[in-house]
Image (cartoon, rainbow, N blue to C red; front, side, top):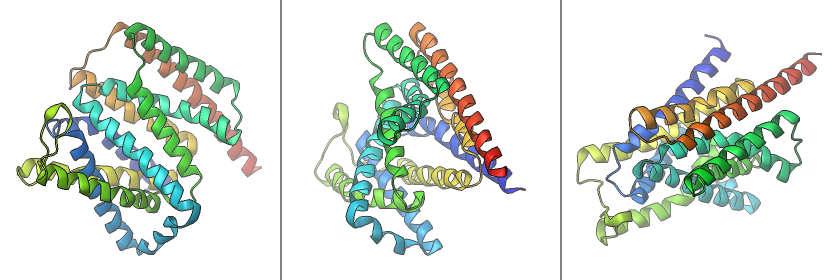
Length: 304
């Protein structure tokens, strides 16, 4: 199998795991979100730490906790923890459709941040895509009487996370290991509180599930695996595929989230969703075509 085919297979598996993850976290809906988030943080740290140990790259971590890198790692840790927590919450309160919209919005939010922070040019195609996405969000806001706050939270935090990662020189696996390492003490404190101090999660549910039920305990441990493996596969694919290919296949993630939310979880789609989502899909089609043309032109320039 060629390197390109391996890369395509890797990113398809990664996006499939991400896209089906709401069905997984639905199995843990009776566990308070902060407890699930804490376990996801600690077990993903174990997975990433083991991977770096096998690769002999644990020695790369200390450099990330010095100077400006330490601030970037801390900021990235904060943003990704909000994103992970928001996603887990979306499953527990039956708003996976809204979550999927957030990940559809994410690449368009990156365009805006790229323009504001890095002076990147917004082409005509991207401008049209942004206008359509804005119309979709306004449609939902006016139709539902409230802004799609969860969509904006997830799409916005993931876009900000992408910007932070863009400024970091370390590889994705090393940097995310440093991030969850920063979050680990907070996760440990929260779990100690739920187990020994009777702290409660939202809507009055008592925590401390781990160790009281073997099935729940296994699911919490595996949450680290389904966090680490897709990221490793995505990193593998990104080094072997064109940017346009990565971008297109990445839409498999929110597409599966949306499908699973409607078909399996039985979430309701309003008429406002039926107007907004096609607008978002059209925006992404225009955006993807623009990225593809740019990527193709860049490769031709390199060959020439």
